[in-house]
Length: 341
Ligand code: DAH
Image 1 (cartoon, rainbow, N blue to C red):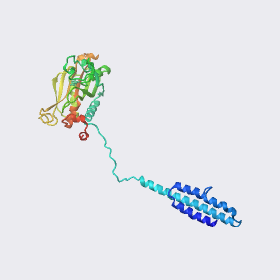
Image 2: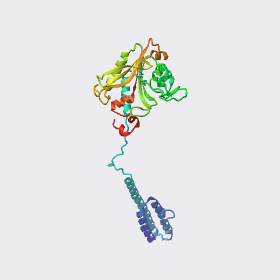
Image 3: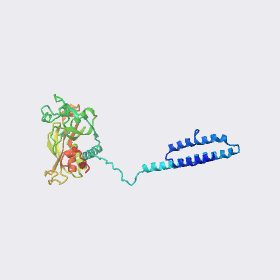
Image 4: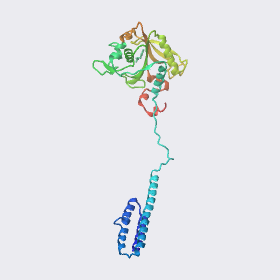
C-alpha cells in the first residue's frame, strides 16, 4: 500500500507540475483526490490492514493528500502569473509610437470676414437676422418697388418655382428689409447675411449662388449722413483708420436717393494696381435712403420715420481681403486652398 501511495505521489506531482492550463489542473484534482479518485481507491483498501499498520498508513495518506493539494495550488499560482504576464505583454502600449493626428478643420475664409462684419455691427447695436431663401416675388421684388417688367424679374435671370412667377429663390437679401419692417418694433437696426441666387454661368467672378449682407436702420430723423458715417466707420474697422471712401450716385428702385460706395484701394492708395484693376477705387456696396413707397408699403409713415439700407457681396469682400482671384476657389472647398487661411 505504501508502494501504491509512493507511485501515486510521483505520478500526480509530475502531472501537476507539467500541467499547462487551469482546466487540466482541475481534471487532475478530480482524478487524484475526487470521491472516485485514485487516492480514495487506495484508502478503500485500508480495511485490509492490521490495526497497527493503519494509523501510519492513514498519516501517510493524509500527507499525500495535502501534498497533492499544495502542488495544485502552487501550479495554479504559477499558471495565473504566466497568464497575467502574457496578457500584459499582448496588450502592451508602445508609448514611443507617434500618436495618430486627427486633422482639425477651421473656419472658411469667407466666414472669417462675415464674423468680422457681424462683430462690428453688433458692437453698434445692430441685430443679426435670418430669413427665407425660398421667397415670394412680392418680397423679393414688388414690395421693394421693383415692378412687373423690371429686367431683374426676367425668367432668364431668376430661379422661379411656379409658372406664375410668384415663388423664387431670392436674388438679393433686400427682401429681409421688408420682413424686418413688417415684423419688428421701431426703431430697427439689423444686418441680414445670407445666400442669394441668380441664373449666372460659373466663372472667375460669377456663381449662381453667392452671399450678400443686407443692412438697414429705420428711426426718426435718420439721414444720409448717418449712412455715410456708419459705413465709413465699418470700412475703417475692416481696412484700417483713414481709409478713404467715395459715394457715387446710383439707382436702386427701393432707395431714394441711391448710391454706390467705393473705397480707395488699400493696396496702392489710389494709384492703381492689380487689386483695384488700375482704377484706384474698389466698389464695395450699394446703398441709399429707404424709398418712402417701401416704408409706406410696410405700414411705416415716411413723414415720421426714415431709414437707410445697404447691400454688399460677401465673396467679393473676402476675395479682396485675402487676394483670392477666382470665385470658384471659395466654393470648391479644396483643403489645399482652405488651409492657407
Ligand atoms: N440688393 C442690391 C443688389 O443686389 C444691393 C443693394 C443696393 C441693397 C442698395 C440695398 C441698397 O439695401 O440700399 O444689387
